[in-house]
Image (tube, rainbow, N blue to C red):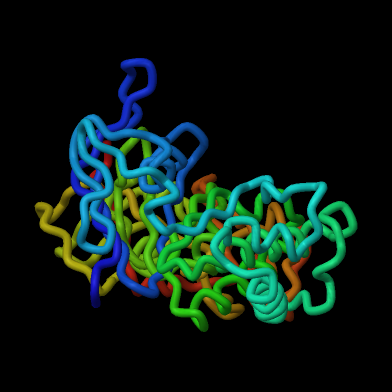
Length: 348
C-alpha cells in the first residue's frame, strides 16, 4: 500500500522539556490508525505536530512524499490539506450547520457551498438540518457536523483528537462505527487519538500503544491483544490476570490451572519461571471439569457474563461465559483453559 504519511524519528519539546523523541510511524492511504495511551503520554502532541501546530526539533514528517516538518521548518497547518476533528467539536455557535460545514471553503461560490453542505449532510445522516444551529443539535449530531466540516475540503487524511469522549458509551460506539463507515466509503485515511481501548479496537486498522512518549507497539488490534510485546502492553490492552508458571518447553507452560500449550514459542531456558497472562476469553465453561473455581464477582454484559473465579490457591482469574451460563456468587463451577495464544513473560 502507498504511504500517505511518514513520521521519522521526530522529537518535540515544551519549554525545553522533552515530550517525546525518536518517534516514528506511517499511515497508508485509506487506513485508519490510532494512537492509544493514558493522559500525558504524548499522543495529542504527536497529532499536533502532524497537523503543523507544533514544531519538531529532530526528525522529519513527510506528507504525500513532501517534507512538512523538520528542524527549523514547519509547513503551515492550512497548507497541509488535512481535516481536523476536535474533542469539543469547535463549531461556531453563531453559524448554522451549513455555514459551519463550509467555513473553510473560501474560494467556492455560494451555490457550490450549498451543494457541498447538502451532499455532506446526506453522507453523515443529517439531511435537512443545514439551517439549524449547533445548540439545537444533540452531541452525536454535533460530532457528525464536525466530521462533515473536516470532509468538506476533500482531505486525504483526517486527524481526530478524542472525538467521541463527550458522548455516552452506547452513542460513542454507534457514532464511531458510523464515522468508520464514512471514512472507508470516502477512501479517507485517519489518525485517531484516544485513551479508550474499546474505541481504538472498533475503529482502527492499526494501533500504536504509547507510554511515556514512546510507541511501545504499532500493530493490529488482534496482535496487540494476543501477542503483546511486553508486560505494559499486556496489562494495558484488554483484561486479564497473570498466574505463575514454569516453562516445560518453548511453547508449553505448567500452571496451577494445568499445562497450557500455545501457538507461540519462547526463547527461554526450559524450567524458567514465567508469568502467564490469561484473558477472560481463555477460560471456557466446562461443568464436568475437575478444574473448579468459586464465583466471587459477576458482571452481566448482555450476551456474556464476566465472572471472577477464586482458585483453591487463593488466586483469582477472570472468565467470560455466554450469558446462559448463569451462576450465582458463591457457586463452585467447572472451567477449562483454552489459551491458544500463549502469552508469558519472565518472572521479575
